[in-house]
Image (tube, rainbow, N blue to C red; front, side):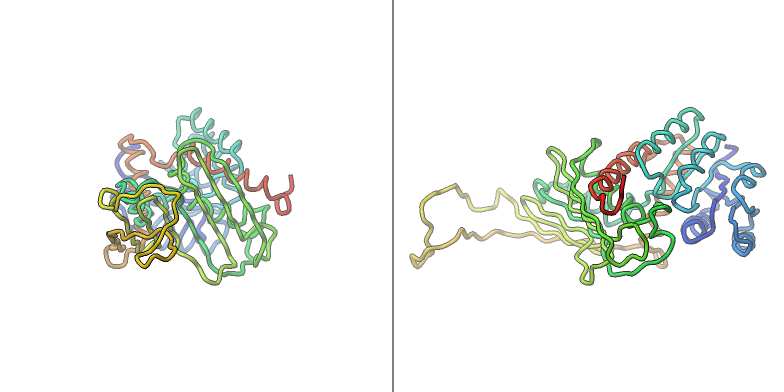
Length: 358
């Protein structure tokens, strides 16, 4: 690259290409410049010219042939991610691909190999790694105040009927591949680098397509907490997005607010196992009972006016990407981590042949 400003071409000007990538990239002119976009719809091309002051093409092939680009953002429809990213890498372009990167771990392997052979960067837009609430959650876990973490719940629930292209298996649709990359990525950071044990149940509840819109995913790994991950489109009474159970306390909350409480083992009454009957102060049979001193803490999202949590973590991701491209820093979200994600999702599909036949 010629300087610190990364010249970007964006494939697609839909909900992702424009609303997420384009509308955020223009906020950081000292880091990125939208040089060109590609979209099959003329009105989107004309809008991009006005909004970004860039060139616009009907196809991404035309765009990369005509423009000198440091980075191509692949925000094409999900089922085109793998093939177009593979071709872009083979043609010598750095690529940031929207999620899902691919559908299978074997496809991710091919992309990693193409990246290695071309010497070009393969990045995946997993911005939820930088979610402020998730970062704070990790800090609480790492502090040790909750003790050994026994279980972590992730819930991305709501009640919704959906009938668009992302409900079809042929388009890599469904809740697992659409929403799943975010919580699955977060969960796998708590489980280590190896393939966890997976138990998954999927269903079609309110969708008009043939892909799932209900996912219950349990993951386990030696010495790690149990992960209970749920993505449901038929949940009328949503539970907290995060819930942690630890030996010394717990945490609950969502993207805007977390609270946690814990006791200090050194302050707790000394107890020992007994097989003798227990009695209360009146001599009546009783259960175990003790008084613990609980400590309470909380966190609330605090961002500059007009900046949402989504915009913030998008900015954090892109600044990380810029450091990698310009300063040579390591990617914090790697294709290898995404490959593990794809392996988990493939096992989920294997366990649900009533939805995904071989």
